[in-house]
Length: 501
Image (cartoon, rainbow, N blue to C red; front, side):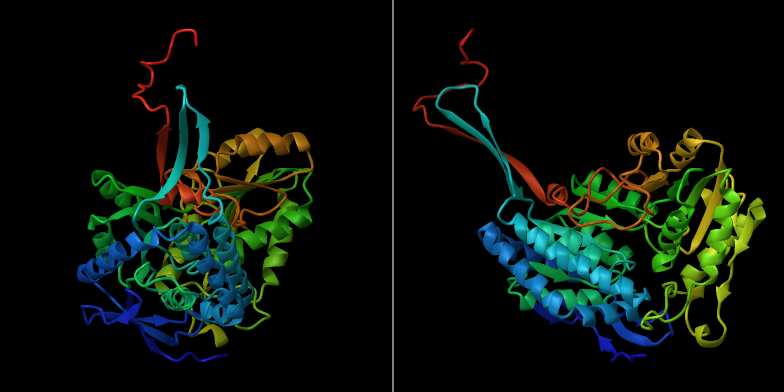
């Protein structure tokens, strides 16, 4: 396995790596083996102020650059990322823990987003519409909001960062980015790539630090007009409240409690494969992870057997090993949270089929590993069936029919992703209509977003905005209505319209 060279990171402000205004820092560890990877600063409000000043100055110039030229920077960014894909993927595995196959996929997602959003530089469509008055032209155009703040999580440290920063940049904004302290190396790399691609100084600024300090300072900074956040529901609600009182636009993506429905006519081999990938990929540390399965009572036992047998074949360890299928949990705190939920599940009466414990023997002793865990005989009211665990734990709930399955799916406070396995086309169309989630999969698991479609959910998952796809531009632009009157005289809308004309 590779050994990382320990980096002492600095903030990236106005095109330069700058020492933070505080000497406080924290270490970054490889969750697979506890190796120290980097030392990341714990910056403060002064660093946010410096980034804000640089962003304001840069944004005024950047907004005047024609959008197709702004897009050229993203095209170059995508090409550089493509050249460095393997380097980025291996570094991502080391700081995050996800297996190398998934890391490559995440980097590819960032590459795809670079090229996709670069294409928007020649679109950024508004609308033209007839005016109600003679000799008058009416249209709407997108305008940048100015300076935006993005706060990204550790579980997809490069993909989510590109979902947020690339549409903001192509739309003519400047960005202040607070990455997760657990995964700062992806921010270090991406900032360097954008700089190499020709992004002007100050258009992207990276300030490392905690959410309680740097994140709060971003919320309080008047020149930051948008906060785009992905993380926990609790933190997101706090951000929404504080941004609301300041009339800041806020975009929130706050997790899920995603359910898979398996009907009695389903292809159980396909269903088991989809559930296993959705539940245990990224060690269950995905907001789209499958954590509930509503399975028809007629096929419940067979599905249980298939899942347990398949889970037993999963290889667990350091994700840099190509043979490994499940990597570590991000840190010890994550392990403790997952174990606590397993204990809660057992105390509530759920039946543990497999897993349910920390793995700390042999080659796994220095890492943060948790066994893929399957519960059955779970009821909808149990905490393990309602609360986000963020680990490799899935619960099976028996249902009598399609209607009951949909009802149980919709009972939780989250609404990100859902899925159904069935051969009945009528149930397929009823499911995509009735499942109250932002994403619905048919005969697939609950994960696997594509960058040209909107990503986000309903209820406790978010506040109506979306990452990815063209919808992402709505977060980082304002609509401006433009009226061009070439009549040569004053015309008053609604007043000077002739009756019957």
